[in-house]
Image (cartoon, rainbow, N blue to C red):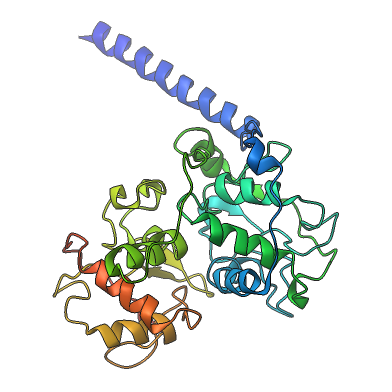
Amino acid sequence: MKKIMKVLGYGLGAVALLVAAGLLYFNLKGIPDHAYNPPAEVLHLKVRPDSVRVARGEKIASMQCMACHANTTDGKLVGKPMGEIPKVFGSVHSLNLTRDSVHGIGAWTDGELYYFLRTGIHNDGRWSPPFMPKYSLMADEDIYSVIAWLRSDDPRLAPDSREYPPNQYNLFVKVLANTLFEPPPMPERPITIPDSTDRVAFGKYVGTALGHCYSCHSMDMLKVDELVPEHSVGYFGGGIPMQNQEGQIVMSANLTMDKETGIGNWTEQQFIEAVRFGKKPGGGTLAYPMAPHPMLSDNEVSAIYTYLKTVPVIKNQVQRYQAGI
């Protein structure tokens, strides 16, 4: 018996040593680089920045870019400390998106921007870690619109040399970036915006490809599927722990149509007012980090509601945040 326990102890010790060696390797390696290999048509992409695209790009950016990249003092997109990201990820700052050619994206080509928005890969092979969204499912025209807006004369994008210290990713992020997460592949065919008369398809597009709602409102942040969103664990069932400005935990809501734990008793109008203006059906406002989305139209939010009615119902009682508790 003693011999068996001794062998078992040696075995466990060897496993612990291997794990420690692996963690040390990932810590020293850091966030991995990836091959910068855009298709020729992307490499030579030139986006025509007309007023329609610029307006559309600003709308998308107000949903996807402002909250993370706009400085809290003057609103310029010079980046900021990402205090709402859980401390388990380390000390993180968003990047400067102004047209500054050194500290911002002023020297980037349209193709480099397109490839980065799709894959998260910079032209030098650096890869943005998992919490920077990769827009694998966004329509080509909407990507072009974002690029057109980034090139616009919007004063929030005027060249600005402000830059935060380099991100200090901890071991958790480094392990994830070397194991569970990798750059998504480029789309194999053109992606178009669904016809708005197809309420389910259009609502799915706005809620997933455009709004990324499922990435917060599913049940496990590490098991969100950006290529096939409906394969995410607990798709729209809520329960992912988020942080507000004070560092308090706020659980994401269950957005499936379960009548007891989801939004099955909400009317379409209540859902529209919640999404667009942050109004709770019973009074009060929704807790940060859920922000109002006034840039979306009633028609777009109505389509999301129509789509959510087709999502499999999940019974998941999420502990709701109460201010002051």
